[in-house]
Image (tube, rainbow, N blue to C red; front, side, top):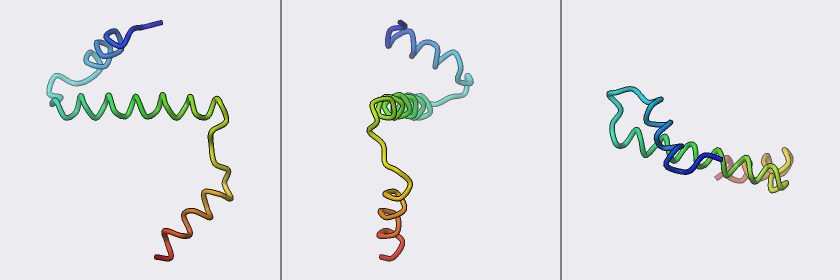
Length: 62
């Protein structure tokens, strides 16, 4: 299992040389959110389509 430092090194290798610190932070954030979402899906902590539509309809009617 790769360590956090290994993952950051791999990320830095994948980013272009012109990447800013903001680009690095954003890339780390996106990877963390994806990992968290995958874990939530694995344990069944997700919303079904009907619930998503119900919640979105509240936002769209305001």
